[in-house]
Length: 279
Ligand code: ADP
Image (cartoon, rainbow, N blue to C red):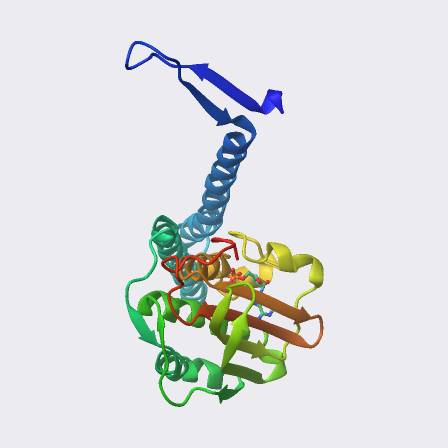
């Protein structure tokens, strides 16, 4: 469409011939808008706890000055808000690091069952506290796939944390590893990890937007749980970097399954499956 394209004549480095630069303005504008939205979102996310903390500081200096009980309660809330801001900044840094690496594929191999056993061991106290029974499946033995160990740990931690935060009412967490002989999306053999809960599930209309930065089904609840709204965005970018796929299946009232599909090996073209980097 002519209106969406900018054609610019450039100074000619060789003094003859002609060259033009073509910029798809609609794409550039869209990227610019996304950047502006992101900055607005981050500012809002940081401002909410800051405003609350400033309010509490004022109250502590004034009306609650001599009230020991109120002071303790306000300090607790301030500590919680500060911890959430800290997590938000850590998540923003993780996201920016992963985004800058998304085209650089991992050069190491990881033992997937061992990595999952380790994540489950660290999450065990949280699962107990949430009253959730953990059911591992296919996690014995050893299976190596190309991957960045720290990033894959983060993927499974985020998904398991979500299952415990939003799916605990079902009292169940399934973590299953299975091999797929031929994964059509990756055009080859793959390994799939299903993180399953039997909690409240997610309404279908939210699913396509769930991995967007700061998208939440229930913002109040996410904040109350200490969420940053960035967990699934980080998961998506890490899975993309691994040339894998993220699948989300959910039924409202019955639970959710988040499936991470990772290619078993590096493809003929050096690991980039046809279909590229989309999830
Ligand atoms: P948050 O910090 O809010 O948990 P995420 O990006 O990890 O951010 O998740 C985005 C939203 O997706 C959550 O706020 C929640 O509404 C929804 N969600 C994620 N996992 C689950 C789950 N297992 N069950 C129900 N809802 C979920």
